[in-house]
Length: 270
Image (cartoon, rainbow, N blue to C red; front, side):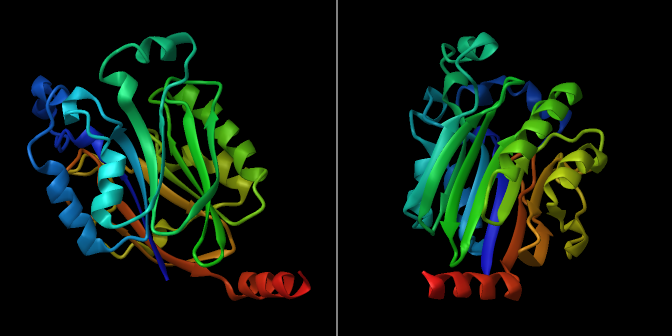
């Protein structure tokens, strides 16, 4: 069984989503002391095999130039990480690459399994445009995709269409995850789900929490894990914690027997 978590960690600012939290402007320039250490202790108790982290500080002066993705990788005892700055280097994104804090904002994929065939796709629409793709053998190959979608619905729809094209070119089973900012509800993903045949296994959620944002009183579901038909999700949970304005989503998964038999057959033929 493989355990996977997707979590928007909000650059380790420690704001839980109350309106007055965002008046704490100083959090943009200085992360709360020991927040990352407390988050590591929390994550260690969950024992994930793979973590998809959204809104990661790549090493700005807010974190005293500490690359948080590398920090979590090291403290969790993993040896595999890939991360990418979220913004493109053209149009508005070009400006972000010159702003001290913004230019260090990234997303990351951290794994106990070796990551290979790593790609950082740059979508054509939006400001947050980078999509991380990597494959891991856990123990069978699965391609992991991490995305953080736009705040504007019209832009999200274009990004979702691009994501569909990326997914449909992948040969392995796929897990798509991240913060999709679906402020208008799950139906925003209907076209992507129909086009890619991914599954939303939220119905397996055994926790009493049904939404992921804001963390202090969740009333919207913005964070998702979608899976291919070859993957069977055994458990699905939204985890209560107060390190960010989002809550983490966690699944335990394995491969369907048909997929395992097919892989064994191909290995014998090889």
